[in-house]
Image (cartoon, rainbow, N blue to C red; front, side, top):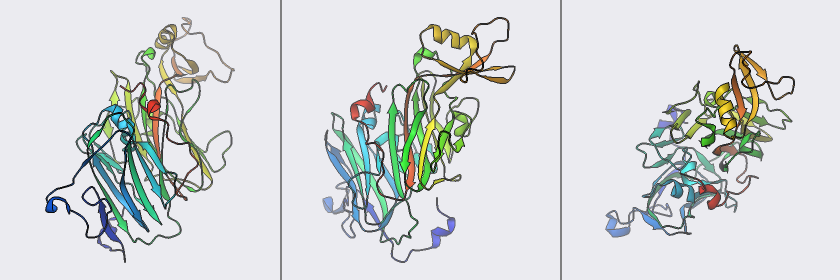
Length: 383
């Protein structure tokens, strides 16, 4: 995120501060006081329903790193604990997401990975390296919305204070949502229409496939992005789910700098993947909306079998002799199992459990997006 030349340049007034339970205020000269400086306050427990401020500072600055870990990293706990980040003293969070999902892996699961913006070296910790500037203050709050105590929370927020910002800085935002299941025949929304000027930084997405589809491929959906007053059709459109994260012909496990698939568990039908638009910026000046199509694919005989089992399906296209025939326009139709022609390959809309965290910068400390859904809806059906 920074030029190597930044390493040997010192800003005029910027002051380095770390916030942790050893110095919750991140104030100068007030760290490591407990137990005569002998590791007296490295962690604490967070009771059910309790909130704790990880950072609460005034003035201008920039957050450069957030690290934390907890003892209970179960799917239910990672979805029940929420992280909210507020800028410049406003009361509406710019960031509001379940703890696990915010740190770039969906589905309440942790695995080792590293990307440009996040990492988890051994599947036991949470690191975020997204630069988060602010003008008049920053506050990070962790809330335990589970029914159990969150034991052994360790954390460290690294922040520069007294940083001079120009008029062009943007505030960091993150928005989490889930559809379980998605609406048949409709795109899944990653980022609802957000108003303002900014930059779509990327997303991590989780999918739990419905067993009724018999293990058929779920990820043919294209990512579409509406920018600056686009009407019925978007300006940007990809070619497929695994294509969006730089792979092809389905996806396995890998974690690269700007794209990856951290979970590809075919047996359980769990998939988690990400894309960071750091080298290929997506700017907007009025508004932005991001979706992904909920389309899968399979050989014709497999689609017949899942339809016979009662799976919800809307046929989108069939490929015959490497040529795609459109089925949504009404100009063409197909009879499945027609023995007078070759067996085709079908793209079809389906219903699964989708979730996502959208990361973006905006020219204001608040956004117009819906509040984070309740904990019951976040954890329901998570396994």
